[in-house]
Amino acid sequence: MITAVYPGSFDPATYGHLDIIRRASSSFDRIVVGVLHNSAKSPLFSVEERVNILQKATKDMPNVIIKPFEGLSVNFARENDAKVIVRGLRAVTDFEYELQMAQTNKVLAPEIETIFLTTSLEYAYVSSTIMKEVAKFNGDLVNFAPQEIIDELKSKLCIGNR
Ligand code: ADP
Image 1 (cartoon, helix red, strand yellow):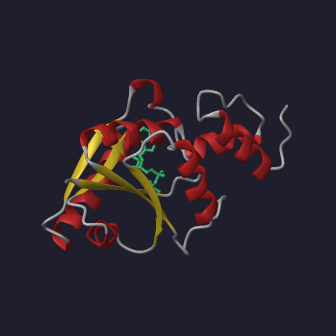
Image 2 (tube, helix red, strand yellow):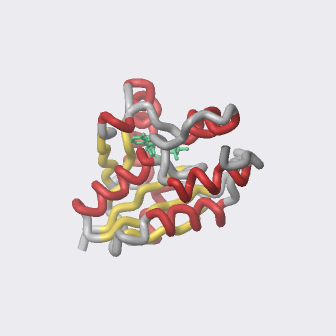
């Protein structure tokens, strides 16, 4: 059985994340999505909220589980008996950072492979950061995330369903 972990901030999850999770879930036996609790960052949603949002959004994917984690992704992978870390690549801008992270993780944990899934074209521009910006100015979020996540985001930002 091959387990892969998919670590990230997911603040909140978007169609881009959900697409990577769905595609990874058909390539591996089990996907453990790791929601990063990073005390140095101040996310909009708490780690519990981000876990909850992802649990609801992935409820039709039986081999996907969502867990909070702190610290190094390689330790999270080891704790979950995962041999693979999945990351998504959108554009060249992601590449440099992701390559450096993958190389660092290889040094820290040689037994773990990082595998990149390239974004589906329709979600190439989607990021949690851009989605939050669009939400603040009451833009149309329909292409960014499922309605339940849009509702969570609007209520967090105290924006009515205009
Ligand atoms: P991080 O803070 O670790 O960058 P994110 O939640 O922003 O966390 O992203 C987690 C992972 O999902 C990263 O590998 C990122 O490149 C990938 N990702 C984010 N948005 C998309 C998207 N639209 N398409 C494909 N991959 C994506």
